[in-house]
Length: 247
Image (cartoon, rainbow, N blue to C red):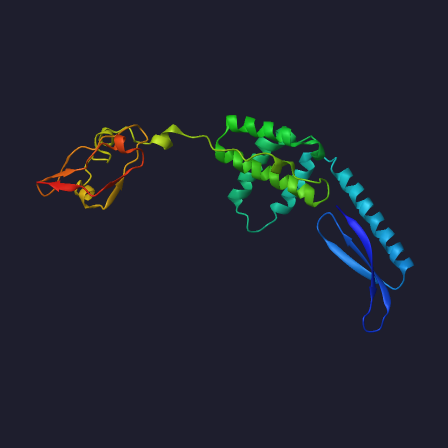
């Protein structure tokens, strides 16, 4: 919160008394000015308080502007950066036009709260992919932060809404794990060089699909490699040592 104060200062060398008026603004900026008398300090402090009140009031009036106006102001600054690629600009403008402006466009920005943003985010996640939700949320966060920095808002409501989690895709989780080779031996077979199995020091077998029993494998030297007890008995993620060669 903005504040103004007065400090009395006495010079250690000359004994001269002065007064320092200091101020701290809502945006984090601060300053100080030194005057010769207490009356001057009081007058300067009163002037600073009046200025802070006026700026706050003007900021509150700006908070009544619609979201679309703030989006335009933010876009004018953000898109002017010469380092933005044409593709980035096109994609950002498309998301603003399709997903943000239709929902928030005419609403006064100081009337949009976390509950409304949470509902929008949930509805968007039901109709688009996770990447689109994240990118649209990022744009919304930046526009609201722009309004905060300009004094129209005290806080950014987007920060009070949890970041959406990505929904698990069964194809990504299991992939090709249902192949018969995995169920039979815990490795992919299918032309793989089985000698690599006997040559490794340790093997971690993942039991995501239930118990997998390790069977005897033919050793490339003519013997057989014994993997020991079933993996299902050892537990998920168990480490199995180097196979012993059985004559």
